[in-house]
Image (cartoon, rainbow, N blue to C red; front, side, top):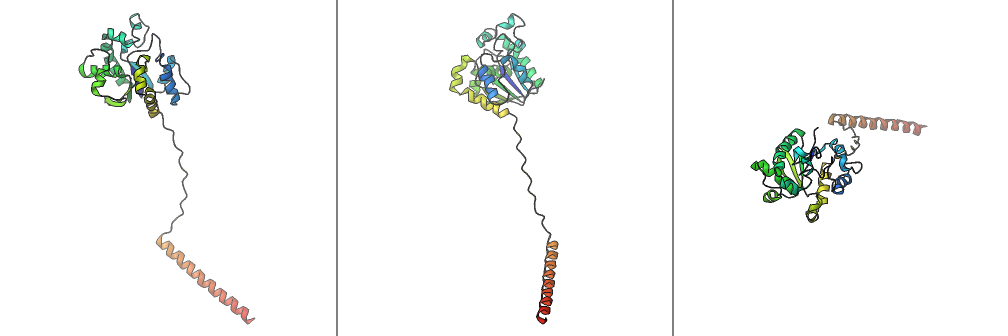
Length: 234
């Protein structure tokens, strides 16, 4: 399946087949309010959004189907991933392959920790820990901040409740809404009715029209003289 947009976090929200359970109002609510969905989808209905070209992925890529094993159930929070950073080191190369195969035009990172780990690994071949340090070093601001392999890269405020202070400080709702609005299909404007232009005469045609009008006036004048002359005689 191909996507025009990929939403990338660190891992799935919980040990369930779905995305953004805890942040459902921030994510699913905002995308509905932006007009990209006909109703507010439930987190487990994320495949409906995939059908529209918006996909999901995470740094812990080889654990994306959480619940398949006991090992895969523990990575629901960033601090748990930090305790087993090897999951990120193994996941990012697989994630990169997936991104390139997806045909995505844009990647959206949910928070500075996710984008920091991705690009730290991409540049250095390793990631020390899950933190926002790399993004701060790059001085990336929220919004379109860089590109990767020709793909536009967006950084948006973390949807997690644990990052609520950052969300409020940087008005996370506005950033996400602006992004959703920016990728909405543009409505076609009605084509204005074509005005009928009056046919224009060429100089030659204008000359002939003038001569005909002149001759008509002469003939009309002569006719008038003849008629009035006969009336006077009578």
